[in-house]
Length: 42
Image 1 (cartoon, one colour):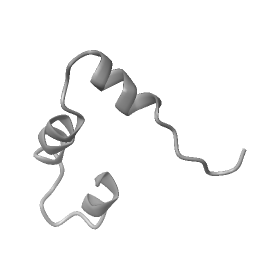
Image 2 (image 1 turned 30 degrees about the vertical axis):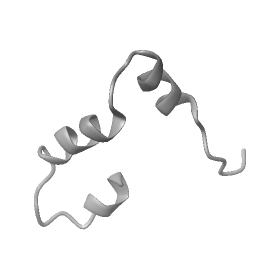
Image 3 (image 1 turned 60 degrees about the horizontal axis):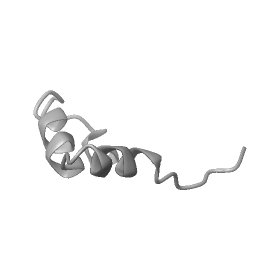
């Protein structure tokens, strides 16, 4: 299966009236500040 963008997650959050960016920010608070993986979440 090739890498393809999926709009399923954003559509789910929008359908629930939730802000996906806000949830990503909340999860980033749980990641170590010096983690080299932080940019992957954006």
